[in-house]
Amino acid sequence: MQYFQGKSVYKGIVMGPVAVLKKNDYQVKRARIEDPEAEVKRVKEAVEVSKKQLGRLYDKAVREVGEASAAIFEVHQMMLEDEDYLESMENMIRIELVNAEYAAAATGDNFAEMFAAMDDEYMKARSADVKDISERLVRNLSGEGDNDLSSMEPSIIVADDLSPSETVQMDKEKILAFVTVHGSTNSHTAILARMMKIPALIGVPMDLNGLKTGMTAVVDGFSGQVIFEPEEDVQKETEKRMQEEAEKQKLLEELKGKENVTPDGRKINIYANIGSVGDLGYVMENDAGGIGLFRSEFLYLGRNDFPTEEEQFQAYKQAVQTMAGKKVIIRTLDIGADKQVDYFNLGKEENPALGYRAIRICLKQPEIFKAQLRALFRAAVYGNLSVMYPMITSTEEVEKIYAIVAEVEEELKKQEVQYKIPEQGIMIETPAAVMISDRLAEMVDFFSIGTNDLTQYTLAIDRQNEQLDDFYNPHHEAVLRMIRMVVENAHKCGKWAGICGELGADLTLTEQFVRMGVDELSVAPSMILKLRKIVREMKAEE
Ligand code: PEP
Ligand code: MG
Image (cartoon, rainbow, N blue to C red):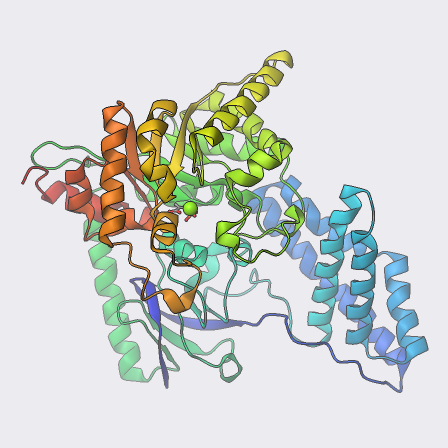
């Protein structure tokens, strides 16, 4: 039995088998070989294994995100059949007498460079694909296996760290818990864990080399402990606690269908935050009144090229149709900072959180923004859709957005495409936006306060820096005063204001938020009934 203590990002308890995910970041070593034909045979076998894995990934992606997004895995399969690529590896082995891993890695690098240097934007983007398939080959050659979890049983994912694009590709049905060595409590992986109501621990000082896929573990999100190979008494105790938790959850379920209203009559909207249409099930299951934050950038993550207008339209349409008249607030893409996407070619920045991200990208590269706006306005015809813009700092930005919106509307009208200009709001997540919220309120339909970034920018603390978790204090008086100010300024203009950052789900602040007059709390679906319980038992007037 081995114990490790980490930081919990979702309270829950689970026991199950472990799946250790190792990153493919080791250096491929060049070795001289005696038998080139045996190495060539290894390459051929690895190519076959890789093609099978890609076939499985394709099937899974078709089921989950549709054919258009899945097509990339077919492209990868075709690349693995490319004669130039295969010959290049074989020649290198035969002429230079090098090992298969080295030949695969070096050929991948050469081809990726060649694609990157091309003028055609489409061909340039293939560079990332070549790298991806070469890494897959190297993984298979070195016995690291596939990071594809589709064939595993539901497991506790143990990893060094997980990026948003890695988690977005995971089959959520198969995840019992997350346990990572790194990561911060405000990372998107932590947000995903809360969405899925699964225990998650970060900052766990474990050595992945000492752990094996298949071993049993207990993840206790209440104490922040993970126990590998638990003894029998621990297993029994865990089973008992899992049962108790399930019973508590059942009691919460009785609140489904009930209103979010205090006994003295104050109502509040309790909505859900989601990252993709795949999360709609959680929204329905937890009886959300609407969707307060659809993080649309997740449509852009974990792929090699921009989602088309049509793909986006289908996703947004599905969301509004599923919600059948309930409000769905879709945030325009918030790429940058921790959400990196290769094909955006954002380059390296000294301070990415203060860098080229979110609305700044949209205003500088309006062609990307316009495709998304077209998809949103077309989908707005099918239900109760609102749009909100992230990372606003000035009234000029809002004016520029409206100018682009007007151009998009003009185009749609000319093309006689069905559309609707929906309600438009902004996220308040910079201190600048807070300070001018009186003026911004006159320009927009609503505010949604992004406390994750607002805390980061107010306290000058990088939300991704795990060393600063102890200093990251969203309860800081400065943050709470800002929230009050934003709500008051919105109300003076007859507009509504909600909170969609993680603080909205902080049960110790729910009463305070209701009393401040916050109109909407948008939270991980798993928190909706817990908030409803507090609202229904508190007094709005003290
Ligand atoms: C926020 O900043 O609070 C927010 C909701 O946006 P994100 O966490 O996606 O940056
Ligand atoms: Mg934000």
